[in-house]
Length: 252
Image 1 (cartoon, rainbow, N blue to C red):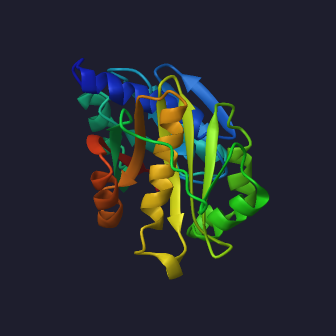
Image 2 (image 1 turned 90 degrees about the horizontal axis):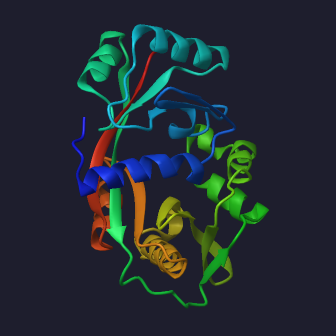
C-alpha cells in the first residue's frame, strides 16, 4: 500500500477520475471499492477497483464481487493498484485470480503544453458517429463493438475532446481526452495500420495535451500496457513518466 506522498496523492487522483473519464454502463460502490459493468467492453469498465488508501477485500466481499460479475455474464475481475493492502492482494491470489494484464499509470505536466493549430487536427466536443466507427474499427476483440463503445462515450458528463488526424481527407488517427478538476485523461489513441510510424499518434497526443492545457489542466494522465514498448517510448518522449504500476486479475 502507498504511503502518503505527493505521488501517492496523484495515484489516488488518477484512479478516482478514471471512473468518470471512462464511465461504465452500471456502477456499484461497495465500501472502498467501485464495481463497474459495461457488457465486457474494456477491462477497467468491467472490474472492481479500489478508490481509497488501504482498500481491503475480505471473503464476504470477494464472494459478492464474484456473484455480481457472474450474474452479469462477466468473469470476476479485480484491479490491484497500489491503493490495496498486502492482505487484500494475498487474498485475491489465494482465490486463484490470475493475471489478465499489467499496466502503468503515467502522468505528464502540462505547463508547457500549447494548443496545436494544424489543419490536419480536428477536435470535437462530442464523438461523431464517424469518429466512433473509425476508432472502433482500429480496436481488437470485443472493443470493435460500436454499440458498446457508443454507450460508454454517451455517459461522459465532463468536458471532453475527441480528436481526429486527417491525411488527404481521410481520418487516419484518433484519440480522446476528458478533463476533471485540473487533470485530463488521454486514451483510445489509435492509428490506421497503413499510416503507422509517421508520427500521427504523437500529433494526436500533443493535440489533446494542448486542449487539456487550454482547459486549465495542470497534468495529463493515461494508462498503457507494460509490454507496449512503442507506446511507452512515445509517451516518454512527450514528458510522461511512470507514476504507478497495477495489474488486472480475473477468476476463470
